[in-house]
Each structure stands twice: as C-alpha cells, then as structure tokens.
Image (cartoon, rainbow, N blue to C red; front, side, top):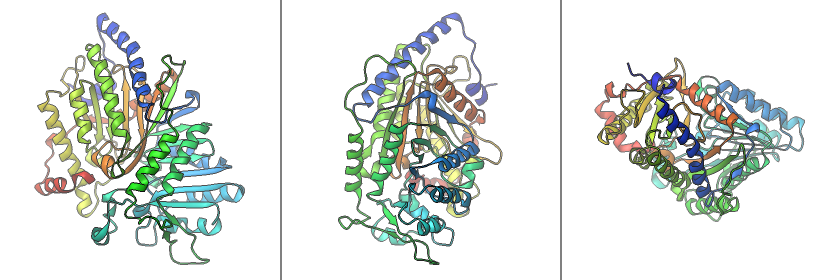
Length: 499
C-alpha cells in the first residue's frame, strides 16, 4: 500500500545504476544551486554565516526557551519583529523588563502589526506593553505597521476582527545583540507549546544581526509610533503617526522606495567567486511586499526553479527533490506553474483541517479550513490535468505529491522549502522565514524570508532532521474525499486572495 509515510520517510533501495545516477546528481546539484545563488546575489544581499554557529531548532518549547535566553543575555539591543504579542505573555514581557532594569544601556525595539496589536478591549498588545513604555520611555521603541491596502470608506466599515484581511506586518525576527532567530512563529502561548513552526538560530553573526536590525529600523520609518501612556493612565498607549509628509493610508511609494534603498545598500552586484569554500553557507534575504511593488521572493523562486528544471533535464533518472510546506496552503498561482512546468519532483505538506489554526472558530472564520480544502482540491485537479500526480510506486515515483500534517491537539504553522539531490539525501538549500508561499503572502502581507545554501555536512544534516521530524506527522491527503459546501466555494471565490 502506498502511503504518505512511505513517500516521506523511507529510503528507497535501488540498483547499482540508479545509485551511480544518484551520486552524479548529488555531485552536480550543488554547483547548479550555487549558480542560482550567484545569479540571485547580483540583485539581493548575500551574507556569509558560520554553519558551526547555526542551529536548527525543532520544537516550540525550544523556540521559547531560546528566545528567553537571548533576552536575558542581551546587553546592547533587543530587536523583535512579529505579528503581535499575546495578551497573556507576561513572562516574556517580564523578561524584557528584567533585562532593561539590569542593563541601563540596553534598548528594546519592537516592530508589530497595527491592526493585530490594537484590537479593542483590555487585552491588546499595546495594553500589555504599557508598563514597559511607561518605565523606560527612552529605551523601549514600539512601531506598528499598518497595511495601506485598507483605506477610505472601507477602512471605516470593516470591523476590527476582519481588517487584517487586507494585509499585515508578517516578518518574524527575534534578535539580541549579535544573535538572531528567524522563524514563522508569533509570540503567543500556542507558538511556545503546541503549534509547529520552523526556527533557525544564528549565534555571534554580527552582519546578519545588523541586516535584520536595519530592516526593522527601515520599516519603522513608515510605521506608527506607540507613545508611553500618562502616569497611572487606564487607557492603552496611543499609536501616533509622526510623518507629516505622507498620509498613513498612502505609504506605498515611501515604503517601496525605502525597501529598495535598504536592499541596494546591502547588495554587492557581482556574481560570487566561481569556486566555493569548504562548508560554505550563504544567506540571501528576500522581501515580498506586493502592495509596494517589491517582489524579491517571486523573482528568487522563479530563478530557483529555472536552475532546478535544468538540473532535472540533465539527470532525468535522479531528479532533485523539493519538499514544500505551508500551514496555509493556498499556493500562489505562479508558484503552481513553476511546480507543474519545471519537471522537478515536489512533495508538498499542508495542514490537515484539524491542524489548521482556524479550526473550530466561530462565524465565517470557522469555514477557513474548509476553504483551504477547496484550494487544495483545485490544485490537485491541476496536477492531474497536467499528468504530474505522484505515482503509486514509491521506488519509481515522480511528479507532485500532496500530504497533510496531523498531530493530535497540535496546529501547524511551518512554511518553506528544502531542496535535496534525492529523497534520501540531505538538503543543500532551504527557504525559511515568514512567507506562506500563497497569494496572500505575495500580494497583501509584508514578508521577509531567506534562501540559505550550504555545503556544510553538519548543517545539511540538521536541515534533514528538521524536515524528517516535520514529515513524520504526514498522512495521506484526504481532501479529495471531503465535502466543500457551496457557500464556502463562493466565499473562496470572493476572498480567496486573503486566505
């Protein structure tokens, strides 16, 4: 019987000729991926990091404990970018308070989403942060990004619970001094306990830390500032727009120019040297802000699949493998085309309805898992129409395979890709960060993600262990058997780009 577990977890026995092809493909893939990196580095920042100082975490509790350790050891700067901070995260805020209290030179920089952080009621993020702002008014800097997509009359009519549908600040960066952790996780209890994501921790990497800190400083120039509340005030801190030259609903031109200037300042428009160093590890940050005309992730993905397609054509018997995952699988249509037209073998892992963060929500939100099932059904229809569906024989299978992640009482929020020479080989390349690789990430949310290419065996094994652990909870996709109501289909057609 052919199952997702066999596709994801089992090493395939091969004849000697296939082993030889695999060896050739393995040896040949890294130079091809390095050509991709060299081409991308002409237009994108390209940073070198030490694989020995790079750690791939696997569990939510590791993410949280590492974050607390980073905060407690910070002496110069703490810089955090997230969608929001959960209203019950008093331990986290307390750790920030202790760090500020014990280190008079320490500054804390928080870049969050405006709509998510200012929801009406006593439990908003800004209310949670009020004591810090009051106690350290000169050393706590809170900036709130507001998507300009929602403006005019619609901005007045859309209820607070739904205004995030028009775009959010979505980048996830957790930094302290010269240490950085990149994730897709937000700062809320579930992300620390039972919501699976990805987490890459870089220690003593000043260049990467400075890049991430500079990115947040850039975004703060077109964000609201949160001012300290008055002494003993019972009202939440007030976000204030401080730039009289532009209306906060019309920041598109300013934001686009700021992002381009920032990236250009960190880019050396020359191809990489032709020879690579031993244990070379390169990181290339890509910004995706569709509403600002910034589409670096799209350009990088298109470039990557072009190189992978060439590699697949050269070694047809042992094509490279892309493992692809998103907790919110509404795969962006151009990415669907890349997968279907490239000839690259692709295994996709999405959240099962029970593992979707909106499962059990009230009202329209409760239909979101069903809406993703409908998007998955449409995608698999395209796969079958293109003749690309993964075959039933695990030993000779190729094409596109879809599975779903399920772990009892957990939800799924991981996203990204891993590129390997073969199903049993460790990845050479990964894409990680905030993007969900869907239409919403492409057009509405503002994302920061990273391509990482490494020849270091130790880091490749960490990435392989990460991907293997995530796929251990893969089950056969059952979406084709699920009934999707007509009302849900109509809703997806109306607001599908917001999913």
